[in-house]
Image (cartoon, rainbow over all chains, first blue to last red):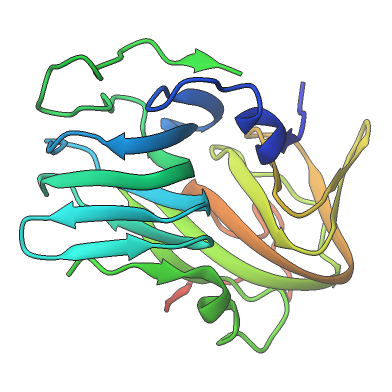
Length: 120
Length: 120
């Protein structure tokens, strides 16, 4: 079935922060959303580029050599191998585009790590 | 260089309708934008799923068995092989996510067909 997805309706179903949900797949690429609040963890992805698109709020993405502040309607692609630390001072609605092999904490294993992403 | 992209700033650089621009790449997947107004052409993509995300306006996507009306903040994935016809009664700002092998008119070759997408 081909069905449309309303982003805000999908965000409304999420209660926890830093808990991704799968909302679509394009060949081997996944479209995910998450609500963020607080500081995530420094990590990188060995094989996967990762796109962050801010739907609501402001997301600071720290790199080792600079900071990137994403506002609503802004996105950035973090290339494979580049260490990054997402920080949401206030609540952020985030959409991610990345290969289906991507683990959220990349090369780091901690309490944020989730391998099974629920489809909503 | 890792640089953020502001969607509306990128749309502001586009003058023509149905002329895609590349704004990002995630492994073998491309993120493109286009302004649409009018009726495109019935087509399908043999190998590629195609994600349509409406940033501004309303986009009607006709399938052979139903119509899907996408409003701002809504998206749909058209699976490979599924014929579709995008129609923008008024101007639409569209973001696309699809494999880098995707040709805009899929299995059809006509005046809309473009193989070289400019990166902006």
